[in-house]
Image (cartoon, one colour):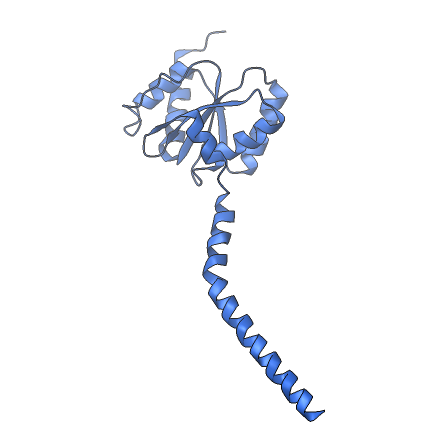
Length: 173
């Protein structure tokens, strides 16, 4: 069923607005996924703060040309049935949502991504991004590394204090 010109224009405008503020837009092939699987993907994406859209590639190309950041990007990789995931907060979240979903549904395969700076990423680069730890986990690791000297000093001082107290107790006995 054909869609009207007004509907196409509104879809282009909505997609263009979505990618304008997105830090990363990941796209993947979804051949063979059922409607219920796509609804499951959308629900998991929503939980992670990621929006998922299915659009015609031709309309995506038009939306990209209307955006100053993406107007010169190569769109040759936009072929086949693609689903687009984007996040305004986290660069890695869309790739991780797709990777986690693809564990149970191997029909979903990375095709590429657009970074917020207007760079086209290959499927291999997106896979590498998806394997990175999540943002909260990275923050926790950095904080743990920064606090490590403090914990070591505290433990050393506590050990000396315990030895001193043990020595005084032994002397008293």
